[in-house]
Length: 247
Image (tube, rainbow, N blue to C red; front, side, top):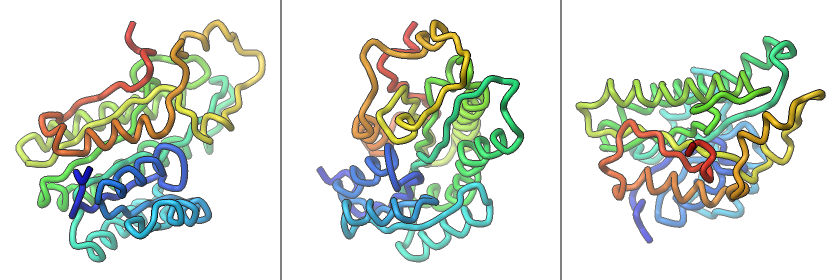
């Protein structure tokens, strides 16, 4: 398939997990992919795995200046921008009383601030190219979850950030959507630690009998939404959570 031939995509979180799988899928379908992450070693591994269509770029997306610079460099190097995939994210579980200010700020910095600053920088170029933004939300942005208040707050912000931007740019050729995964087998989940003294009966409400997704499953959904196959989608929040939010 060559849905993305002659397209340039900017993918965050490209060093691992869903971000790397998305970068690989886009590149395999012809896109030139700029893969952004703070993990330079992971980016080097991704570059070796994906090949010449992948261009690693170390970026701290919590910084507005770095986000704007990264988009400017991408456009200057590759002649434009067609897809922004905001995949990077962090997650942790805490009792409400134990969340520190640094933890709260980091969660919002990565999960919300970076997404906004990159979108702000990319939007003029995406309007010009009739391109699109795909944000990664979560089932946690669509439902309350015990012990995940800070994470749920950020993903709820992503949901309404996506909808609000879609409304503001309704009369342009650019599309803006979000994909909301459930549990996915990535290092983020594998290294996920739960606090002591939790009620596991509460946690069971947020798991699926169908198990977790593979990163490639989400990459397939993201790439569909980013492709012309989904040209009627704008302002949509697409659940890909193995049924967690179905009822």
